[in-house]
Image (cartoon, rainbow, N blue to C red):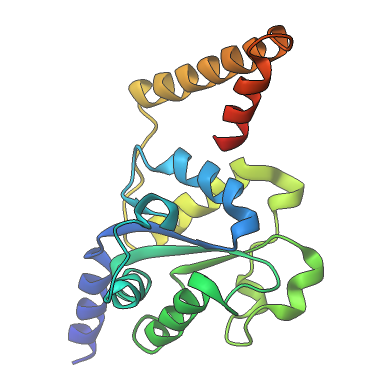
Amino acid sequence: MKGKANLSKFVKIMDKEFEIAFSFLTRDEPLAVRLNNHFKERYNTFIYLDVQDQLAGVNAIEKFTSIFKNQSRVVVVLFRKGWGEDGMTRIEKSALEQRMPSEGLDYILMVLLDENDRKHIPIWYPPTYIWYGLEKYGDIALISAIEHKIVQMGGREVPLTPSYLALRTNEKIELNYYRKRILQDLDTEGPELAKNEIKL
């Protein structure tokens, strides 16, 4: 019986639509987008911004709940005070709480963005599980922690391919070129380009 129960849990962990789902407050959207951009070429990721138009309607809450409760292998919570209190994060928090009895907490990576908010972390999330390194080590360390969590939860690590690295390099080159144009054309079309930059 015990072996069957463990096998059942393993099958549930393996069968997920999304490898990573991101949960965050609006002010942390830039960080969430950076992380998602890093992973989305290699993994099936979920970030609300990409599908908000598809989640409109009567069943939006049910669909959204299902993503965080059933369909994601790893949930990355970019935590600061206010997370889980309103908006989409309240739905996400509820979904995670509903999932705990069947899957525990290992699939959640709770990233503390502000040391002063430590006391506001939900009481059900163990302090020893909290990831603290963003301010000290930056995005790269967090990306590594997320990849480790994927493998820990039964996913497979997808290596960085030459084509993926080339794509990222081209994006950086294009972005730098675009920003140089803004600085060079301050008297002509620079202000309009700057407005577009803000929208990116």
